[in-house]
Image (cartoon, rainbow, N blue to C red; front, side, top):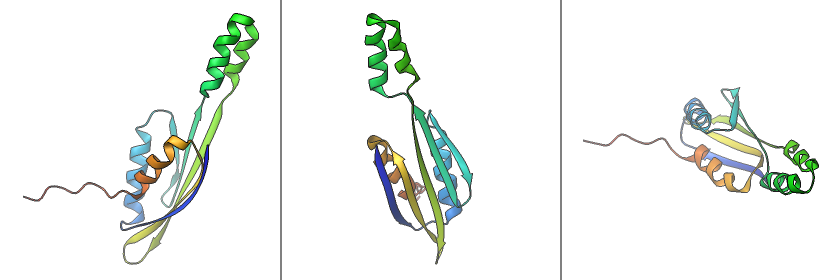
Length: 119
């Protein structure tokens, strides 16, 4: 788990960034998105790999190994959008997230939308 506290300057209005991030994260299984324009709270609850491995090993030793399946982790990230002139915004990403998902989340917030091809 990594603690994230990053500020990103974006050249898009906050409403567009909000809509893009909510739509993208909502399509990923396991993530819950709540909030309102200006604030997004992304939450993921999962069972750690070590708990699953110990549960499988524990089944063979005694049935108490199944208790490891009760272990769950929750990571929560808050994305706050502050408007700035002219027409852009500042996004602040803060929270605790799995190391593998830090780059994905920061790229999702900071990447501009795809532009249509010019004829």
